[in-house]
Length: 275
Image (cartoon, rainbow, N blue to C red; front, side):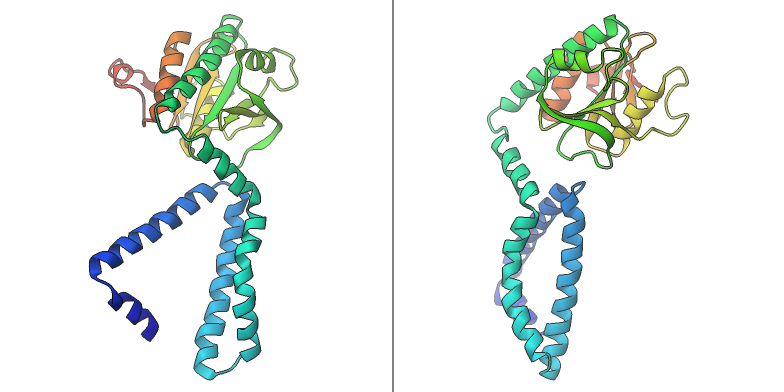
């Protein structure tokens, strides 16, 4: 306790607050990045073990001059945990570096969003015209967790690929396509359904799945009705009114480039939101 007191009295109050804010932001960033990945469970387990060992060795050991052998091992082994964490979190670290490399600093985010919106809207226009049902989920900052089934593709997003996936009798046409980090991560993915009654009764299971997956996740869903060919966007658990292919392209560019919450002011004023 004395050493902790010395730390907080060594510097001014403003410097301490700034340092604590930086530490909090770093911890928050790590936890936000790990949320929804397998690393989240690992880091929780590691923290529990680290806290328990530290309490045992530092508090009780220092107070009683005991646990000398355990303290010796703790001091040596704990320094190796950084290397072990790099090995354990290698997939997450690689994904983080890849995401950092694709970070848009000078307006290229809108250009990438425009390209993605073009391919999806072109595919939606074809699927709508032919009355082929489709459901496309586009992840943003935080990945969608608890996805079931599906076939991993890791393919470039293209209108032709999406049209092929949702072509009737295709092995992958019946469920959802998930776009992650600007690529088609998987197809035939099962999504959670929204509660019954949360969408109009005239809409089917695809619309319930679109509302369900966007209700608790930072993603957008594009759904094409098999019955009437209507195109809608789902965000934050809410469905838009039917859109044309051009309106879909505009809405996708708006959301994927600036990532705003809710629908654009023009469509909101026209009563675009439905539940």
